[in-house]
Image (cartoon, rainbow, N blue to C red; front, top):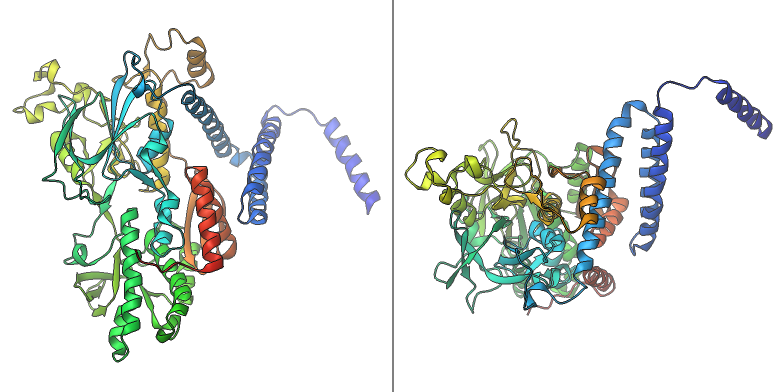
Length: 615
């Protein structure tokens, strides 16, 4: 009753006023933390209302997250990790403030490369690649301090998590791309691929794109014109390539899904198979083969492509009445592991398998591809006891990656910079290891110790940096690689981190890097911001903050694991997971233009279906 509640409140008030003040400050600290949680939650709710997809679900997710954080703040056992996460969030906000200031400089006048009198002391910064890591670096880098040159065989960044959707026409690939020149109009761009590097002379050789080269055909560049570019700092962010050379016939007969051009080719091939099958009326086996779509690899790319293919089949078969409906086509997902989506928790992995099989996907676990021909592939169980031949119409290889050829060239020049998997080993500040006092320039000059190498031939520490999938962070104390997933999330965070690291006036050869004595001599406010507010007189190390994972399963179902660092905030499946997936993918688009285009693509597909036009 109301009288009883009032009596309990009075008793509770008396207890609080008569209790001796505790010696620990945990209660008052938790109150402060709760105010911080409120401060973070309110703008989050405002953002959630602005999302065009699933605002009620977003509000529900915010309420769930806030409840968990609030409960955690009351537990002294969980206070420490929560404090770390709140501190990390505050640092992220301050990083955003710095980024906004950097962006603001771009509206104050014409680009530096167009000025007749360039600022003195600008270093030449050459960036290899245009993927997640390079794009994040471009967005944040201060082009007033560097003369930036981007070298990449493709002139754009692509939102790769949506390549599967682009491959079946759910969205148009131009809706999820941003050109290098639009990402940062203050940088220069060269279309080509790096083929060689001289770390001592600080030059990189680039094979320029041929006139008849397609935007993604950078692997065939041996006979192209070449140009040499000098650099003060080289950033290796060229990513990885699809590892389809381990199985005979896979590279010749399987499609890939790594770049926009891969999605364009795959979309054309899928549409072509439907047209071919529609003409076959007297051979049911041939029609069944043409409409069998095999996806190799049970990671996020393979699972999302399988789900998108199921949606595509249900959508477009109405345009082919001869085929007899969606049952005429088959989607096969072959995976060598025991479970799909190893990055997710066990309940989500089981849900992914259930949803895919419920919509007709033939999931083959513990299955390896032995050989691939133009019309069939040989499969075997992991133990090698059972072997089958699977005829197919289209096969897509989504199983594993390998370093780009340039990475092997770089490691030939710098053998001590090699990490496990033939990736580039970097320290906690993303500087290539083995340079500076411990550099390995002597490995190409007749052996001997580093001390025997003339100073003029040494390679400065910090002159070459690497990040993204091409690099692997190595712990300086243990020498062991730091466990980081090869995801867009890691690459983007590394790109933004490296841009801020380069924007500040650190001594890159020192370990740890520290602000130079003459840094910001005529900019006292900037110096106070770095030293007093950010407390970054010593450069912070890169630290990855895991924000969760998403995966689309088809038929309006998705998985969503939400977390901040090591603190899980919720795991969602089905319709709720799907709305979170759409909301996050829309918000994470790199520009307002892309958000508008993707929104209209989704609306167009929902109203009119997928366009099966092949151009």
